[in-house]
Image (cartoon, rainbow, N blue to C red; front, side):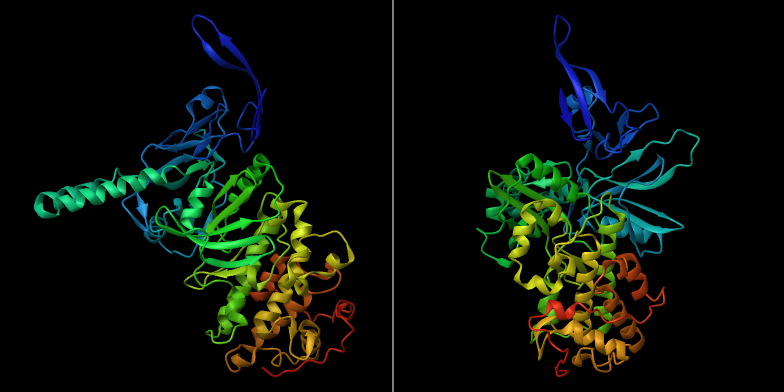
Length: 518
């Protein structure tokens, strides 16, 4: 008996004059038409119910494929040639697929040429499609592919393929022929480059996430010397991996999962891709050590820009875009993933900004990854208490509406530039803000540094949405999708009531008085 992800098989050992090895007797599911995970990455389901690699790819594990186990998927015949957004790759049209692959990312490009250029400039982009609905791109892998049967309209997508690196090789040969004195130096550089490539190849790939050794990550982070931050789940360090690519390495603590269980959960997280979610590149699982490797966000966390003195002031338009983007990221986790994923720790520290101040949510999926260890981790999150929904305090079942509550608190902090707790003359700012919103005095809630910059209509909508999100009963809170539509102005927002349980949350029962000074 053999168990693969998405398939169980019964094998028999055969040893005779013609055959020696394992031979399949029975498997379930026996057809890719039954299970979406039957065929692996870059492999498509055929009309016969088996799997076949798309053009430019071959089986990653031919022995597994011979046994009828296709989950290992396919790998490139010619490797992609892309570093730091510079690529000699090209695209080939796949016009024999039925429907689009899973997890497309919509972009704003308005022509097919711009769509192709955007994909080519991002080394992790593997394909793009452009039609009347706009530009869609895919990162890392293509999953859930199906070949057309000749009668159904086929979808046309363009697949990234390698180009043998002919341009680079020809350039090197030309330099060596023309500039003789530099030949020795070039040879030395080539040897160093070759050794670097050999070293980088030691990084294995599990599915479509890179698997690093602890030694590799220790070297990549310079012995974990550049610490970016620390939270309830562990410490985060800056590092550089093959590419070279800057990454953020999170070293998890208090982790009790076994290796196989950890790998399975991480693979699930690796499937989650959205413009407003920090991308997971790889992981390490050695002994009791568990580390995650994420894309690096150059401008750090939102709290360092929102609350720290001496930093540039975030404009109202940027704050509003951050709120909408974070809302879309949470909506994707709640409503568009195969299983609803509750973040459980939405706060400014977990909203990161890249070099262009694009905003993304970090630490999503930690509740699923940590399992029973989650409750222990939450007790160590001292800065999190002000963002927890009442159901956490009262021991009630936790749903996606707990994230909505936390989002409401963060939205008030974006509007006011103040911490929800421990700031000013009042220990819980949302109570004061809710009262002012109910009175129609929303300008007093706005960050004093933004006087004259905010749009009063947008401000009023944002304040109302925030107060709906922090309602006591989760039934009265909107979904994240509804909250986003409200913020975008697609839905009218009624005046929300003042939540009554704030008095129970605060120590000593404050009256709601708060200093409006900045």
